[in-house]
Length: 207
Length: 266
Image (cartoon, rainbow over all chains, first blue to last red; front, side):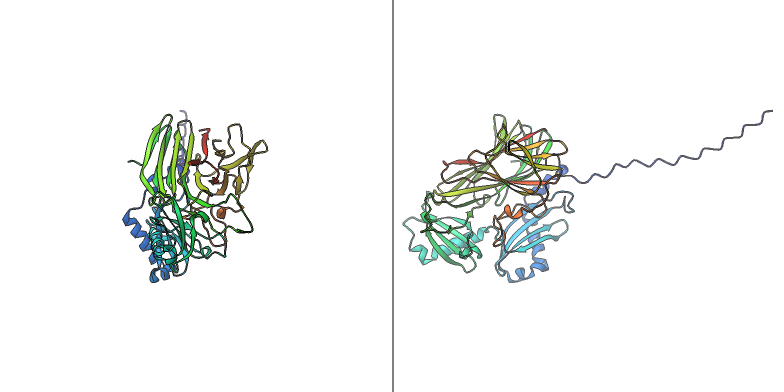
């Protein structure tokens, strides 16, 4: 009788092949969410301003209250930045108390100020500042004396002096253009918005 | 009106900004990403006189000025209109003596025209206009970009950030600058308007270096976009471009400034 074939030892179970995991793709700009570019809602704007003014770094600005919010717009950062995919607001303000610009990025998802820049740059004028410049120029005697019949304020130019000799070089200023309703300019008045006074009156042809 | 437009082989989004006119974002051509964001951050104006008498006027007394192109100066609606072979967006902006029409034209052959028509009398007729267009092209993705300019009869790679004026040389199609994606070899070609006296700033993209809300940086510093130019490498990085036109007072107005841009290789 033939010896029984020894039973084959059971094959050890093959170690399970590691499940193939696709390498994690870094987030890509190609998959950006268009809704992040949408205009901010009034609630989001309010949220952004609250978050900013609660930040200790701008506490003095918020406390004194001599600042103007220039604009609040959505901001979208690209992957792989950690804020990519977050709803962000960019808030630009001008702090008259310390003559500095405030440029902040608010992460509305996290409720934090994610980026804050304070410097001496001159962001554009807010609508309030444009209107203030007009009202200052309109009541100034040196301006009124040079206005012709029918002259009216046409536009507020966002202006800064090129030379350090010009007072507008380092002071927040606007240039109010006066003229006829057909758009023909006759006079330009430079307004120092910090001291709220007219610093220059220039005939349009010499501007 | 929807802010997503799919027409003429393009799909893009738009929105009206507070100061940079109509912004285009996430623009794809034939299903491939071309542009992350493009806008017109500002149009500065300054003074040039026809006769300069150094005895009477040794310095330039009046600095540059500008008016935001945005919600506060928009007149009428933003228009979306089809034309033969494409689709365009347009909007009028008026502030006193300054009148601008901003255009974004998308052609089905891959051309893209971000233009600005300058009209109105201005404060007077001896001023120069400087429209500043900003483009953040992400051709097939953000990285792997290269920037080249046409000079000495051929395309030459630009390795570092800088300011690159139009020297008068262009390739056979009139292109002067181009951005290339290393991965796909697709390119963005930029052809200036003959009379724009144009220049391009090529800057490595950084979060935080977004389009500023004013051309003016800190006192005594270079205005933007020059304020963003350093010495960083461009090859293989994410690059943003600023096209700046200089429209001199002796042009005939209304004048339409801005480049022809053509996407190739997609």
